[in-house]
Length: 359
Image 1 (cartoon, rainbow, N blue to C red):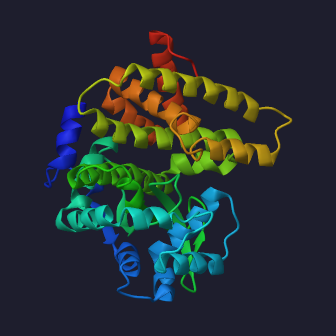
Image 2 (image 1 turned 135 degrees about the horizontal axis):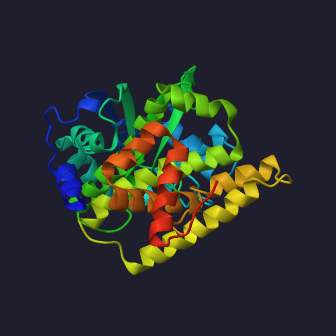
Image 3 (image 1 turned 180 degrees about the vertical axis):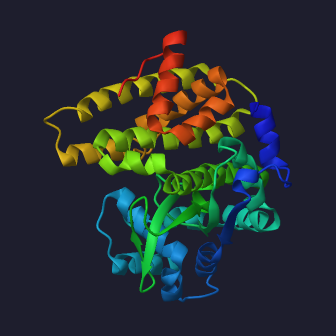
């Protein structure tokens, strides 16, 4: 599929039987957190407790604390919300509430636009091209639209179980898969609402890929076997594939059929070189668990395209596989696993003189 075709499908998808592999997937859109924060900002309600009890709010707040590498205390979150409600200065605003207040008109306009248009069907129609035709994925994925959160995350996927109304974050094979989209981050650059809407589609497609990939892995004996003996290296390489393909989906929308600029190739080449260095370090007998955790977190949570070496390297790998070997080969790596993803990239790298990545 060409980049132009992808762009057209994202904006004007065909809602027929083309998405056979995802025909049993549904997105449940929840706008309550964004709506109630808007009402707090405008003084239409002062019920902070009700806002903090919303599922989308709880997940966004807890994840913000994680990304800020702080300890979470619900009392601190409520204090920040009180300051937000009273239009007061918030010191060390790890929940991004100041940005919400500043961008409120744009957030409201985007929220209204999302409600009018079939974002769920558009996104699923787009993603059907990236999964094997025989993929057996079914279920409903909650999508929480919020208007607050850490500055380093526009959207994310988590797996949670709910205990007494509170989310507990769990591993790959537990709980339910959920998506959170922060509208305040999407509108942070002062563009037209239509541009914000397209960015929302791109962002949601990215995160939906993660969610669907996770669900696919749960039902795959091959992926289950691969995860039985998890190591820091296997965790990182899976992240590279997962984030790489997801970012490639976003890149196609952004390109509109054009080749990436020279700077993109320079930065992704640097990321590939960094990835190899990190893989070498992860294989060291002197590696500590704390250092391994730091390296893996930095792979996609460092706050910039250049520093997120794992995601950026994976993006370049997915790009090269798709453009040199074809969409079918890229899709097969989802079925065959991380080793196949790295092997296919290595095949391209040797043929075209790109940085080689060896696990």
